[in-house]
Length: 406
Image (cartoon, rainbow, N blue to C red):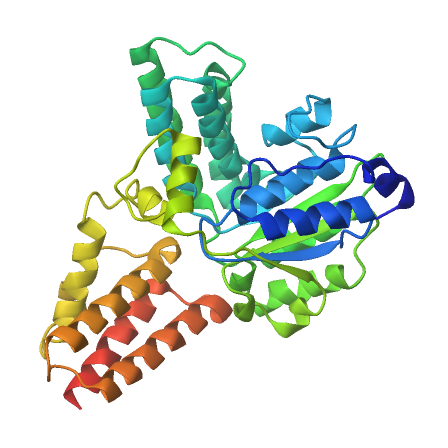
């Protein structure tokens, strides 16, 4: 970080006010910015819904603030950052976008407040941001398909911006419904899991272009899902990042990121927030006292699977694993994409444990350990080789049968 930048930041109180119960990360980032040693390449890692993207976006706002980065600053740069329209911040990678958008749509319709307007439009723009023209080849078929939806969203999203008075109830509901439909179309055009090498190359070119004194921030979610070609292209940029450029990689686990990348980044661990902390976050952000046990469960309640539908899908899969003659098509007739893959395996593992502890003799400890090993293998194949989640679940299904009936 250059000397002018850190002199400006040395004597001010920087507060990541929207990053709750991650005090260690907040204090570390404050200290590094104020001391002038914020690294150009960072890895934020921790479980889903622990605030990693929140921290990355807030850091992007702070480093480009026209003044001293305080929370609530209304300079042009901070205004652009808060609405996720800052021209020098890029965002890409896999995310549970529709869960957030569906949840915030419900929050908006029920709450009708400035805060709900802000949350909804910001979540929509988290998705829109991934279609920045600096990330895509304009001749890419997926990008061409996305343009129509992008235009349709922009034509009506302004009606819900926090600076606007909300339309009447029926008008609001119809507007939100249209936005949700177009967002669903956009989400379908996003790369699944892997960040394509074409995007890494576009990013590499973008960071080397002049930025008129602004600082560029590149946020890469689910960085562990990148294939070898994308990782190798990224490594070249991380080796010598251009001046005033910051890369923030986001991952669920540090151990899933390759050592060659780890050697080039400074890591920040986002802790597990206990049930009380998560309850307070839900109440503060969404004005709700949810009956869910965690933020993750709360958001999953807005998934394509209503109520206990997801659990029942996994339970059916588990039941057929113990049916010697059952076919995979009978065990799993719903598509599980990369967004739900880890969740599926987590629930499946819990179901196996229940069977082991509650049904003596159905499955042995050795068999359970063998199945867990097979599950870990499937996680690795998704993370490092970006294999099709449904094919992995089918392979796992027949491997479990072989283990049980060997």
